[in-house]
Image 1 (cartoon, rainbow, N blue to C red):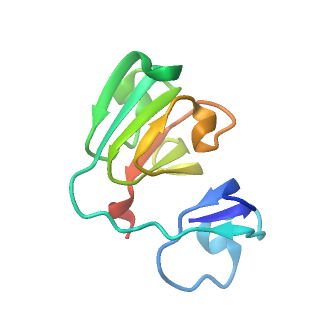
Image 2: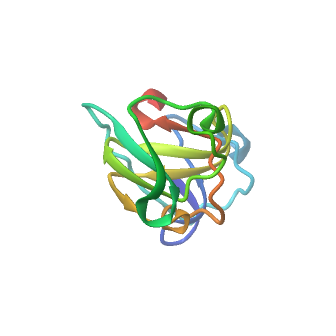
Length: 132
């Protein structure tokens, strides 16, 4: 995962192993890379719980598979908190795995700012193993 700013902040981009001669090859809006981290490959099951409100309140749904259209599955456009129980996931701001990306490792995210977003809009999400 590469980041536009130091300390794993700013725009995030998941890149697979390979060569990227230009930032457009990873859909980069910026050609600035200030930090990066290796995401360990996860072998096992995947489980994430998403919530309608902050601090794990409101409607909750649990997923074990990718979700190309959050609104169709969850009936909301926004995810205000989530709990990654197993595996590594990427939230995308738009449906069909497009737009800004946000990496989520196992743990609790009590509000959308915990995963680095400026708003709660999540259009789709995907297990990282599917991207390798």
